[in-house]
Structures are given as structure tokens and as C-alpha cells.
Amino acid sequence: MKHTLEIVDAIGLHPSDVRAIAAISWQAWPVAGSSLDERIEAMLRDQHDSREIRTQFALVRVDGEPVASAKTFAREIRTEAGALTVLALAGVACLESHRGCGFGRAVVNASLDRVRGGTFEVSLFQTTTPVRPFYENLDCAAVRNPTVNTLNTAAPDARAWWDPEVMIFPGDSPTWPSGPIDLRGPAW
Image 1 (cartoon, rainbow, N blue to C red):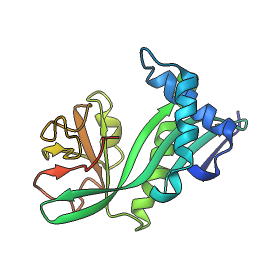
Image 2: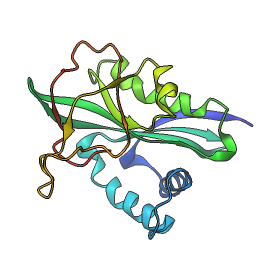
Image 3: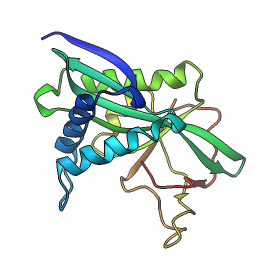
């Protein structure tokens, strides 16, 4: 089993890679009332908008086929100190048949290199409580800032995240504020 790790700009993804990433995501998070084909179509549509927000995918391929992926993109949020552009980390998933091989760790570490390299000061993302230790082992930390999306006109003061854990990388970020956060758009 030969595997490789690569970073690919979303705009440059081959349609077969888009389909594979959608399938990885679908296996991890199927949505009732929707289909894998709908997810593929949405990803293909989003691919054309990705240049503006610098979307990249970290992919582990086994024998040339994607088996694990993580998506990152720039996102401007608002804090009490003003605007802050964070590296949004999303869609971290690995095919069940390849879990336990370190591929999830590999795609997250490769994604967070955008922070380590200085392109972003901090990464922000959400996860579940059982997965939180995975990220803590990668030097991420949970944060407890109240977080809203004021662009959600139906509920601008509602909690913006759907998962219970909100995390940052690096966990000891000196730039992370202590007050409320406005995502200024949907959570990821």
C-alpha cells in the first residue's frame, strides 16, 4: 500500500478528486434527505468560488486514490479587537477502511502548516467531544468564546457552531482574543 500526501488548491482539483473527497465526506457525515450526488454537485459548484478564499485540500492518496482529506480556507471573523483572518479547518475525514493508519493526523498537520509557515496566525474549527483529544495531541486547544453569526438574520445572537467543541491552533496562540466572536457567515 503506497501512500502520498499532497496539498491541492481547490480550483485545481480534478473532477475525480472532487468526487472522491465528497465520498470520503459522505461516509463520515451522511445527510438524511440528501445524496452523495448532491454533495458532489455542490463541491463542483463551490470549486469555482474557491480562488477568492484560498481554499486548499490536504489529501492522502493510497495507490493514487484519495482516502483522507482536510479542507482549509481563509475566513475573516470579528473580535472585540477588530477583524481577524483565520485559517478555517473543515471536513477532516478518512475512509473507514483506512482509519488507524495516521492519515487523519497527516492531513491535519499538513493543513496546519499554513499557520506554522506564517500565512495565518491561527486556525479555528469545531469538532465533537470524543474527537477533541485527537486535536489536543496536535497542539490545538478548546476555546470558550461566545460565538455568533450576525449575518444570520433569523437568529443573529444564536450560537454559530453545531459541534460542542470549538478549537484553535496553536493552542497557546498569543493573538487569540478572550471576548465574543462573530463568524460573519455560516460556521464550517
